[in-house]
Image (cartoon, rainbow, N blue to C red; front, side, top):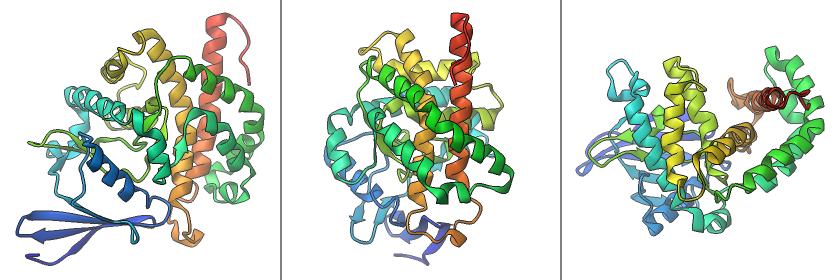
Length: 320
C-alpha cells in the first residue's frame, strides 16, 4: 500500500474500496450473503482460463472479499460526458466478445451451480416464479405508485404459468446450451483498454439461457442512447451477439429464441434483486425494495406484448 484506502461504492448488498499500491491501484469488493458467490465464480473463471472478465488477484471465500487489479475506464467513461454507451461499434465488439465468454462456460454449468451460482435454467423458472407469487414480502415492498399494478400482476401470474412453460420449452428446441449469464451487462460494467474488453461486477450472474443477458443490456442501450431496442441499429448489435452461436442454428431461430429469452429475463432480474436483499433488513434497502415486484409487473407486460404480437401474426386473439 502506498496511500489511504477509500470507499468508492456502498450499497446494502456490496461495497468497494480503492487501494493504492506500488503495483498500481487494486480494488476490494465485499458482498452481503446474496451475491457472495461472485468470489467463487471469478476464482473458477481464473482456473478455467476464461477470457473477457476481470480476474481476481485473491478471493477470501469465507468473508466474501474479492481483490482485483484496476481495469481502466468503463465503456461509459470513454467519452468525457459519460456517453460511451452511444458507441455502437464498441457495443458490437463487446457483445460478440462477451458471447464468446459465455460459450466458453457451457461445459461448466453444473460446476458453477455447485459453487453456489444460482440455477436459472429455463426448466426451473416456473417454480421460481411460483415462489415469488406466494411471497407476501415481495408485494408488500412494491413502490407506492406500483401498488395497483403489483396486485394485478400477482393475480395474473398464476394464469400465465402455462404460457411461460411453453416459452421455456420452445427455447430448448433451438439447441443453445445454458451458460453463465451476467444479468447486469451495461456500459458501466464493461472495462475497455489495452488489455481488451473485460466484464466485471458478476454479483447478479446466474447459470441460465445465455440470451437472457439482453433483457438488461438492450434496455440499458435504449435508455442511454434513445434508440428503439427493436429498431435497426440495435438489431445489428443483437445480431453481432447472436453470431457467436452461428454454428448452433441459423439466425432466424436464434432471433426467435432471443425474443423469448428477453421475456424470461424479467424473471431473472426479479430473482437477482431478491437475492440481493437476502438477510438485509427492509429498512436498509433504500429505494430499491420494490425492484422485485417491478420486474414481475414487467414480466406480465412483456407476456402481453408477446402474446399480442403472436396473435397478430397468426390472425387470432391474444393468449392471456
